[in-house]
Length: 144
Length: 171
Image (cartoon, rainbow over all chains, first blue to last red; front, side, top):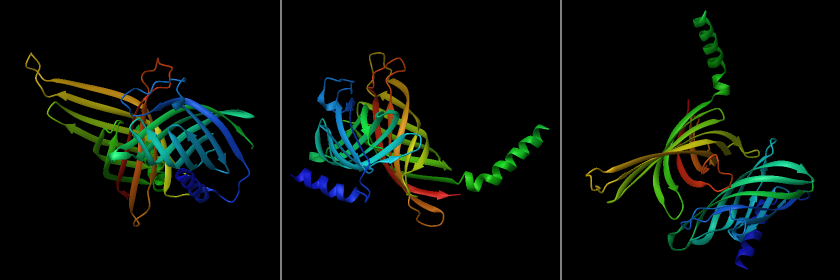
């Protein structure tokens, strides 16, 4: 419930007036959990999957390692950057934090293929610094 | 003839420099994290020419068993986010050199020293509000994604992040 309230507040802050175009998709790859193990590309792990909805440049993403609301900035080259805030998690705990996702939308034929790298920093329990990362490949549907 | 060409080139560069190559340099400090709560204090220096940024971060760690010095540098292109004049994303290439010395002597009586070098993709966000006509504050969140090797197709990687703050001056 607390998480829902936080996400709602962030959504109101980030949501611009225009809210028609949207992107909806999933991605998978490799997530660095800072748990003393290498972040192997293990597609069998649920940790490595993420779902997202981008509504008028506001990006909402949910995974087992994050629940974030951010603003998507797109460039003409297809590159995009998403600074976001919300809940982040690594192998040693979870807490409020920030994320920066850097991606590139490569191909679009109704459905777009994209690649992204993500940094996460957050305040975890017992003075633990949540420090996660991810490299993902995803597909999404764009209404544009 | 060659001198004339060099002079013409220098004149062309210097005449466009104020607009195209607005130079800025600065320094600051912060932290670097390599995961698993491995957090180190760090010093950072940078030079920015137009949209291009060269930044170097230095950190070290010493205890009774080993001493380590790490330098992490990147050359990046800066792109402002949306209409903002102070918030930008950076994309570039970076490298890291780490020197580790094992301080406990082995059976030969020699301490062991190892230098490793890595390269990867440098990605970051920075906020640089203007404090005065020539001075800027800069908060930077940088990262380096290091592939395990060019022959490896998996998307696994090494990763480090730094968060630094400092002051910069426009030349």
